[in-house]
Amino acid sequence: MIAAFLFAAAQAVSLSANNYAVDEPMPAKPPVLAWSDEFNGKALDGSRWSFDTSRNKQGWYNGELQYYSANRPENLRIDNGVLVIEARKDPDALRRFADWGGQQYSSAKITTQGKKSFRYGFVEVRAKLPCAGGTWPAIWLMPEGTAPWPEGGEIDVMEHVGSQPHVVHATLHTKLFNHVLHTGRGAEYSVPTSCEAFHRYQLSWTRQAITIGVDDHAYMRVRNDQPGGRGAWPFDTPFYVILNLAMGGNWAAAKGMDDAALPQRFEVDYVRVWQPKDGD
Image (tube, rainbow, N blue to C red; front, side, top):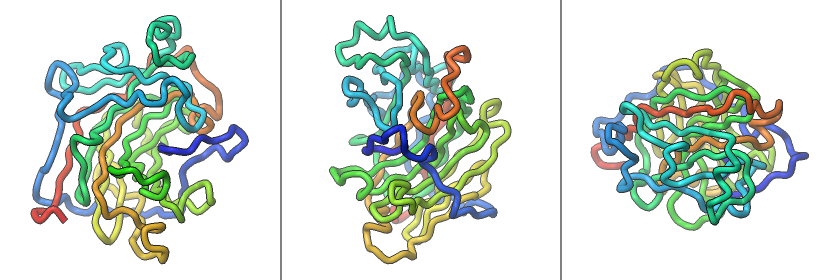
């Protein structure tokens, strides 16, 4: 997801890239399971996650159409050990919220910001995705701190848009390498059962490279080998995890919104993070 840039409808549809593809096994996991959430409780663990509702009133980025709720089981709940983020079209039910910005769709976005962040390691999220037109589930990481986008960097472990079902995208954004400058770095990968079955979406992050894959198969790698300092590689500070299901936007709704298919679910079995013994 693009964290801090609002796009006009006339811009290019795709916010991803397909120029850093690889086809090989994922790197091995480090030895230490440093953090995880198995979603085995009755409700979301507030010591690990926070809801992000910060832009509901003014609207979200990328032309997105959703209202992100907090503590609303219609949009986020734990169901038999699975985190369910559900997108709905229910504007009449949203009118009672003081921060409602007139959105027709509701969903949820959660982050570990300020509660748990990581520098280097291996992230794995086992998830099943929605496929309806207009849906936009994402697993991504953003830096702690106040650096503006894209100077602080962004790691998109998995994006899947309803305009291109059964294809997942991995992308890195930095000051010198991003889609606005037409210098984005990323890759895409076909997952024919992404919306019918759970798959393991994976990130391997070291000082030397960021590798992203599915089910132990790497399909994108970006190495720390470009000039430009932090403009090219800001990935040496702690980042936090984000899970969300956006609706609409210039990319996800490029072929329209499929309201008849709603509600749609983004289901997450677990989030696990491994790190080296020395944390580096």
